[in-house]
Length: 283
Length: 294
Ligand SMILES: Nc1ncnc2c1ncn2[C@@H]1O[C@H](COP(=O)(O)OP(=O)(O)OP(=O)(O)O)[C@@H](O)[C@H]1O
Ligand SMILES: [Mg+2]
Image (spheres, rainbow over the protein chains, first blue to last red):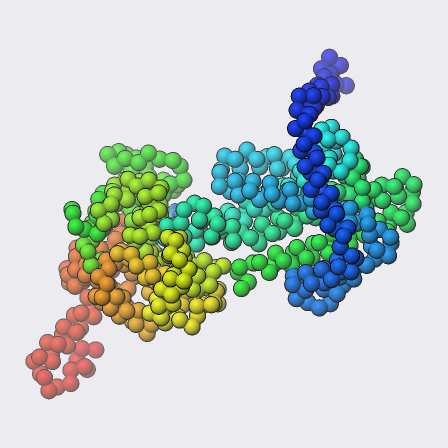
């Protein structure tokens, strides 16, 4: 057995540290929290004010723009109708609001961080192991610090989701920038591009397919995480699944599960199709 | 020397995977660099100058350092040792801002591998240098259209590089350099991808531009005919060194060593044949001499 004398628990110190953080910087967390909540509620308000057929029409148009194929566009547009038929429309909108809020924040942080990774080698060296750790960590783990700092409810759900969903967009932004062909960059430099102009005119546009693939992955991961985050009080479809598990109501769980899958498919197909449209090499 | 467009002195360029502190005094180090597989001495103690209005040709086998030399002139690679002075400005001593200014206004380059922007149309590619300089959109598009006419691509302005042939892409690259209106043109095998007919046309065009605008042209080529047609002077490189500099005709007539002799052999034979032909014609003007020299 492991020596008894070596036993040492960090649980107490962690709790103390958190308490200290909250005591000393409580107001900062509060305003941060209310900022996120404000954004979330605003997104949700907008989403709720759109009629159901508005979504169908929007999805149909986006799917057409993204894929240029009639049958897939119709299928994608019709799928969400099932969510409504299961009576889960409103919960789905809540989930969507959480996903959109988390993804918007994740992109606002992740894309600049990815650019920084590509531009500053030392930053990349430092951040890569952190990203690796973030991705190998089971998603439940993110719930703990988020809950500790922000309690229960939607805000910690957004925080946990955005942290969980951050790595792919950072990585793929960085990768895309690094893969821009050297001769093209050299030519731009030869004509007197500054570092910023090189980034803006050449590297970011050429990295766009990769960045958009990152956006797609980040969105999908956010959707997965939002479902898990219902354990700490994010409502929406995840909560429905959780309740079905608690009550061993397989049918109800199935309906909620199918609804999540439908959301996943629609979001994935549309973002992927848009990414492909953007690819400069296909023009 | 004052008045030269390009002045290169004791230029060295070493590509190395490791950080090295290069010093030409340190002969042991240079020797070890030559032996090591981690480093390549791509340009070795090169000194030359180019006068205003001159077309200066650089030739040499593949891997002899021609592209590296042309990159050093714009400091697209870090220079290991020596100095490069262009239009009286010391390129080696410039800071980032000065270097950007210099690249925008003093020199325009045509790349061996085109270096076009795949996400921009032909017209946008040509206007790229002007855009970086902040030339207004309308003016730069007009100027780009004019230049596209010179290279014969005026109908292709809305296409993307991916849908152009290699020769057409190179002409876009040439238009991009011409539109910059810089006093110095750096051209790295600009015509090697073109078919003989268009190549000839582009060579004539270059001669015309040069006569009209009195540019100074630094021109890398593999083609002896091209060197002969365009060059005022030429340099032959081997393993990073310049082994001979002179007027093309001189180099062809009096190669400095075996390497140059082999390099220019075809041209020498051709010249010998035409000389014999001329001589034969002069001796027997009424006879048909073509059979005799075949
Ligand atoms: N970025 C680089 N890193 C390391 N070595 C390089 C690099 N670029 C060129 N070299 C090496 O430097 C030497 C000179 O290359 P360079 O491209 O200047 O030759 P070149 O004369 O232009 O050849 P070519 O006629 O094939 O274009 C070669 O041995 C090449 O392998
Ligand atoms: Mg070359």
